[in-house]
Length: 64
Image (cartoon, rainbow, N blue to C red; front, side):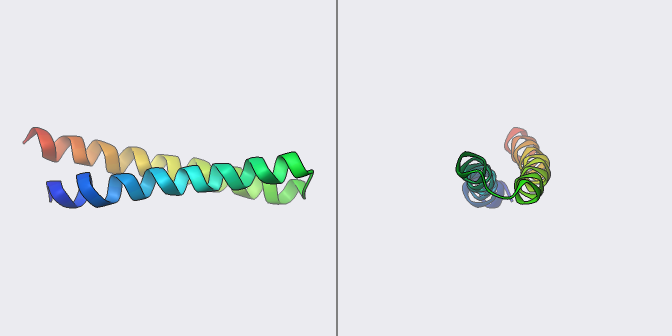
């Protein structure tokens, strides 16, 4: 279980947050649709929560 979280899920969660953040910033800089920016930032917050849960779970299993 430690390998699953530490090797696969943590990097995937971090990359997902980075991609959504990048898309939101690109949309903001280009002056895109404000509703799209809001949607992307909401997705970012949700993905950050998921990333924190995944990271804390990895730390839990690593400590065991």
